[in-house]
Amino acid sequence: MNQKKILKLDHGLYLPVMESFYTIQGEGYYKGSAAYFIRIAGCDVGCHWCDVKESWDSNIHPIKSIEKIVQNVKNKCEIVVITGGEPLIWDMNPLTELLKNNNFKTHLETSGSNKLTGNWDWICLSPKKRKIPLSQVYKKADELKIIIYNKNDLKFAEKEAKKVSKNCILFLQPEWSKRDEMMPVIVDYIMNNSKWKVSLQTHKYLNIS
Image (cartoon, rainbow, N blue to C red; front, side, top):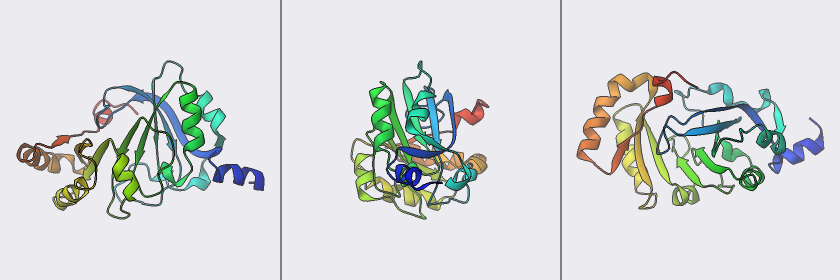
């Protein structure tokens, strides 16, 4: 890669993209909504249960200009979800500015492991124990989504819930491979702690991307 392109990558004018697709949002507050997903490559967290580990290495995915990325977004789409990997490894300001100039709503899915950049209409924060989010991301989160792999994750969930604003919506979501084991635990917990809501990976139940 030439020096000029590396500079543009550093400034968010180019980004490594694993995939992009138009589908139904399957998780969290906006589940069931049509949305265009842009999966940015690169991750500095590396959860063992991640179902898109191929997104971790940004060097194996094509580098695209933000103009090309936005050009591919479906015109009939209202919501554009930037996910990963971990999008905040990169500067999200230029991409979100261009998306908003084209009248798209910008949604972010992040672990919060890096500095918050970008102009967002909605931020889904999903903290990971391996690398705790930065304080600025907690303050901006619209929803907090904690993945429940075992019962100890419920303690982690409560700890993280204390860091977000009072208007942040709280979700517990079973890790997919543990869903049959953990779903009854989550249901029981929420019935005794009603500030939480259940989030499911409904796109997997619907067998869509």
